[in-house]
Length: 239
Ligand code: IPE
Ligand code: IPE
Ligand code: MG
Image 1 (cartoon, rainbow, N blue to C red):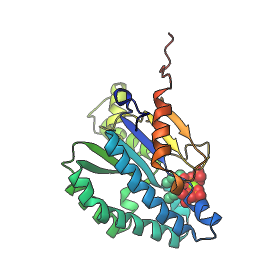
Image 2 (cartoon, helix red, strand yellow; image 1 turned 135 degrees about the horizontal axis):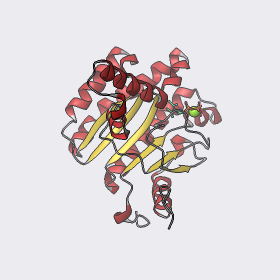
Image 3 (cartoon, rainbow, N blue to C red; image 1 turned 180 degrees about the vertical axis):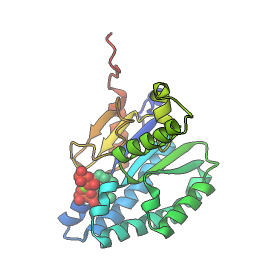
């Protein structure tokens, strides 16, 4: 904690939580065991984020492309999500954490979706931190959905094409009030974005670690934040 400068905290940290399957494989365990262990890391990271005082945390929990995985794995991930929502409700409400979700949520199984919306409702008064779960999420799909919404407004003559600007597009995204991430962390050593927050990460600082998600510790999380604080962000400007 001492290595963190409280005056230079990121406002929004986004994480691509990758490597659960490899963690399990290395131990000769089924992939689902890796996801179980990964869920423990999620709890720890949420707690640490709240303790540090970072107001926005977004976790990539299930991508649009992850629907291609086996029924068994998808079902296990949905069950783990439901378990997480039940287990963490109390801690979220006690700690001022508001839960949000982005993605094509209509594709989620009914029981998962119902619990998700109930939990978002019950935590909606949380003012200290917003935890956003990206579920059935794709950055390209988010932009496509936004373009469709705008096209409908144009068709209904509510707006004219020349009025389409940055603000209007952001307002059509899944969560317009969410600030762009300052720091994007990806575990398990892959150097790619995998269709996460494509619009929002235009000027995000990226931190990639080879650590697999179930092994990602509080110490390493703090290290990533400390490294972020040493980066020079220019946003395209010259000195
Ligand atoms: C990340 O771990 C969790 C999800 C994508 C849901 P993976 O399941 O992708 O693990 P690897 O990449 O196969 O190791
Ligand atoms: C990205 O990980 C999606 C999530 C972490 C939910 P993947 O494992 O699905 O991505 P790829 O296939 O390595 O690009
Ligand atoms: Mg993966």
